[in-house]
Structure formats: C-alpha cells, structure tokens
Amino acid sequence: MARENFKMEHSLSLIEYQNLEDQVKAMERDGYVYFPNVLKAEEIAELKAGMDALEPIKENFDHYSTPEKDIVGKKNKQKFLQKHIKCIFNHNALFLNYIDRSPIIELTEAVHGEECHIIGQSGWVTGQGRPDQELHVDWLPVPLPEEVICKLNIIVPIFITTAHFYLDDIDEEIGPTKFVPGSHRSGRTPNGDTTWNGVKEQSIHCRAGDVIQFRSEVWHRGSANKSRKTRYLMQVHYSHRMITQKFPPYPHRFRFNESILAQATPRQRRLLGEHKSSNYD
Image 1: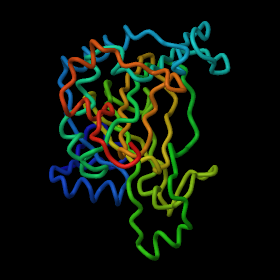
Image 2: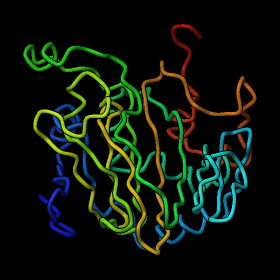
Image 3: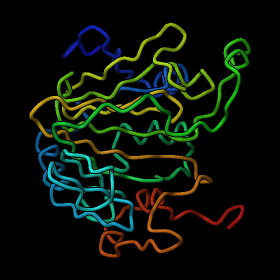
C-alpha cells in the first residue's frame, strides 16, 4: 500500500509491506523499508520535549551549536541550531522504550537474528541553515565489483540497519533525507556520483510518526533545512551481536544509568548488550 501524502517529483517510493517476509525482501532488494504511522501525536510531542531537555556530553562526541556559536563539539563554527546527542537511552527512560518498538523490532530480528542488539541511539535537532550533506554510506562491510553482485545475483548479508523515526512532516523545505534506492548493490561508496544504475537520488517525503529503516550501504544524505522550522529526528542503529556497540566514551568508560537499566524489559536488556554466554565471551 503506497502513501501518497507529499508525493512529488523525485520522491522516494514509500510502500508499506505488512508481511514480514515482504519487508525482508524489500530490505534486500531496495535497501529500505517504510513503516507509516508508527508514532501517535502524543508520543511525538513527548519525544520532542525529551530531546529539547537532553544535555550534550563532550566526551560522548555529542554536538550542540546555535546560530551564534558551537557550545559543545566543533563543527567548523557552523552557524545554525544543531543538537546531536548519542546514547539517548542512557539519558531518559523515555527513549529506551523505542529501541524495541513494533513493527521495527520484528524486522530487525528477522534480518540481524534473535540475538541482535542496538549499536547506538541518537537524537538530532536541526534548525534553519543546516547545509546539504554529500551522498555517503554509513558503512560498506563487503566492497565488491558491481558486476559480481548484479550478474551473479549475490545477496550480501545485512550487517547494520538504522531506523529513522521522523518527528515532523517532511517536505522539501525542511530538508528530507535523500536516498538512491538499490544503491547498496553497487558494492561501493558514491565517490561523488549522484546516480546509480540510472536511478537518481530521491527525497523521503513523509509524515511525522513515520519510520524508514535502511541498511548501512545505501547511498544517502541529509539535505538543507531551508524552512523556519526545527527538524527532529530519532535514530536507532541495529546490528548482529558480533558487531560492537558504539557507546562512548572510550575505551571502556561508558556506564549504564542504573536507574534506567532497572526499568528495561528482558528484550531491552538484551538489545543493550545483556547476552547469553557464547563464543569469545
């Protein structure tokens, strides 16, 4: 079922696959899966308020800048509002409750295994003036010649996925995420290219409360916020148990907030890293 809201030229095709098997196939084929209406209005408001209250921690590589100055972290003295906070589950139990949100968690366990975990969770608050990013991949775990992947129809395992929880209606003015669907099958990084296999980059135009989950090799970028609105985005990064969690500060100085950990369910504790003893333990 396609979502027609905000449909315009060069919009990413947003098709809701309700069957888990079809979601897995879409992740393998297209590199992303769309989940509409995941969050209710009151949840969106609560998450935004929670992000506004987050305090950056320099040692965690957090960043906070205003149009006047960088307050925490250095981003070349950028002159716009941006707050990027890591490990937000450890700040407020509110965010913990979204690391295993259905139906995202069911797809996550299907592609990463029942012993998967999060490798991070971050909150982004971005104001007017944020410039365009360049197309990039978050991680390319298996570089391969394109002809090997496509001609031999190789299905590369899905190592890392990221769920984008959009907390605002996303149109072209507020700065949508740009995707090149299927580009994970290129076997490489963009290297300055803006199209792959004849496919141009496309914008995610969606509603507040929608979620896009995508694999780390897809070519994508954030785009400029040309509006007068502040854009809110929550990310949850998932992977196999054997891939390390990105919980700064390093090395080995991260400490769980015990009051928050005490509120976690068994599934959430496993996603935070409480695994059964296995190889290399």
